[in-house]
Image (cartoon, rainbow, N blue to C red; front, side, top):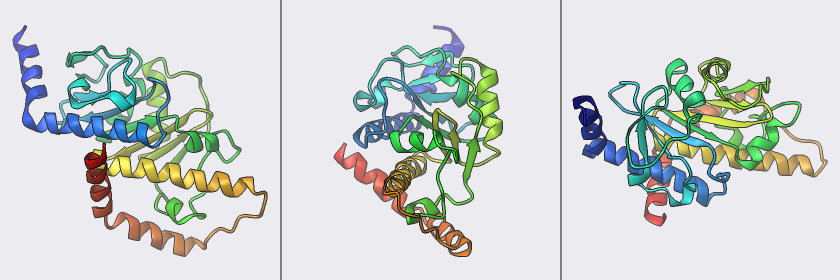
Length: 245
């Protein structure tokens, strides 16, 4: 093992990074538990706090429900494996690396979760944040990428998606899925979960065929500020998932 590889392994095994690996694995198991996974596809990534351009990532070929902290791998910004016992999917970092680098997001969760993805297939391409209370927490935080450009098989497509986010936390990718970002994995997962719930409510409401009843813009902004001003509930939710899962 080279000196550089030994350094990566030492960092990977440190208590602080081991805790982050456990948290990322928990987020993946929680997503599977809540029906947000799709085969062995999609990825969650978390940048190391030292801002070295190294990331934690779920490995290739594992169902999210089976991932534990020891399964998480560490990669560089180009997706090259630096530490961990599993292989890395070559295309895994095309979206993630660009969003980390360009949008400056620490945690990046990319899914094809059912109801959010369903809304990317509509003319609006995303969630109406003036409808349900759950949707209002995302008011002003969503970007819509209206251009479907095929599979993300190179860095250019990842960079296009990252720029389309315009610095926002959440992106609805036309005919594809969603990206949810955060400064911490527990906050990001809480947003991912409630985003899917909000999308579910909208799809169910639209399926009735009855006219929808949006809330006034001013009140929507107030609710968004109230929700984002207190994230203790996000921490408690994540710790509850840790106990259960």
